[in-house]
Amino acid sequence: MSVSLPAPASSPARAHSTLFREAREAEWMRLDALLQRIEKRSIRSLSDEELMALPVLYRAALSSLSIARETALDTALVAFLEQLCTRAYFHVYGVPETGRAQLRRFFAAGWPRAVRAIVPETLAALVLSVMGAIIGFAMVTGDPAWFYALIPEGLAGGRSRRLGRGAARRALYPAAGWIERVCRLSPHP
Image 1 (cartoon, rainbow, N blue to C red):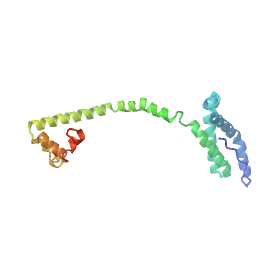
Image 2: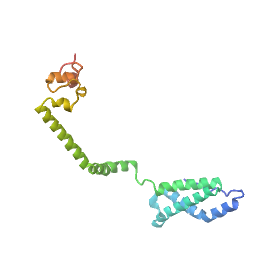
Image 3: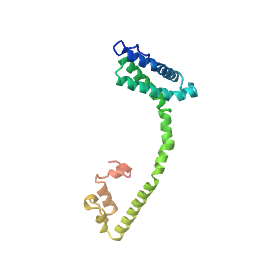
Image 4: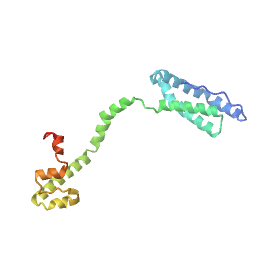
């Protein structure tokens, strides 16, 4: 996608604009030509020297754009430089791989690396949770009065350490026969 350089402005600032353009136009055209080659073929079509020149030309075009905006040169020139810099930005800093390749790399390397990084914290949380469950079980088994010390009565929902299996099931699943229908333990009514 080539953007043509606009004609010089015809205003009192024309002399300044013309001098500004003449001093930098060759660099802009070289950058535009490199971008056209990349867009038509690929970045591999550039030589090593051209690859090294690409970021330098991009920064020079950005500098020109900054000056053009600051000194209020003609709007067509500013628009041309904005488009040129935008195109160059994506080739200088753009993503070199497809979204699918990035996703594959994330699941193959990024995610496993992140999980490995939190292994100590995860193991500490697991150990503390298991220890809490074992200690709680031992306390309630030794003295059922500990049940309400560990689980407040309001959170127990009618459950008690002394409930038998049938009573516990009714307390957990108040809808008659719900668990049997879900688990297909009994025929449907």
